[in-house]
Length: 81
Image 1 (tube, rainbow, N blue to C red):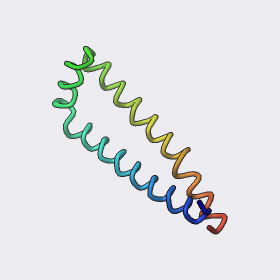
Image 2 (cartoon, one colour):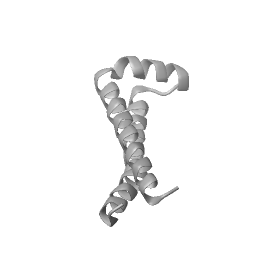
Image 3 (cartoon, one colour):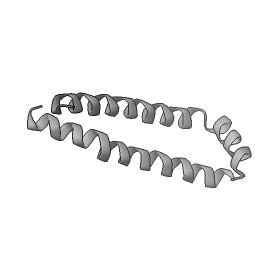
């Protein structure tokens, strides 16, 4: 795999992860009650715990996307590949 291919790969990985992050955020904002009802039944958590878990998930996913996909992509673009 060449540096150019790696740059393209990381670019598409970043796009896919950001779209997923935005989709998950929109779903949790606008469909919180139906989603929370499903997860509450599946995992036996109350609403307060679920909302904390949702926030943790979104925060951790954002950090992982930034660190493992977007930052390396930007670094490779700055290097000129």
